[in-house]
Image (cartoon, rainbow, N blue to C red):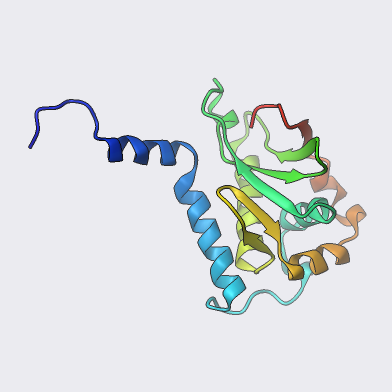
Length: 164
């Protein structure tokens, strides 16, 4: 046992990973990978079986196909620091699914993203980035945006320089 009160390098790195949502992102990446590789049990067979929030994420991701999980650790309000779904709209904008002051609302969209991973509709790419799988694009094409407009409209369009 050492008398050094400072954390070791590995302990510090572990905290940094935790601070960026590493364990949750890893679990979602693993879930998506297991489904994509055929190691997981069968997925839902129709887009209608997904929650409206999951269908909204798919509908928004239809064009660009890229979804990120982001968080910030500098916000005062704890609900602003939650891991949040961001769907790329184009090279300058993304749609963020977060409601400040309402953790339940924000985590509903995180749970919806978990549904997409479990259904094999997304593939993990790098770090916090995921993209729609071929099946994900096909299912997204089946969604009428009007059917999920209520859930899409709850998202917020932000620029790349806005906080997570």
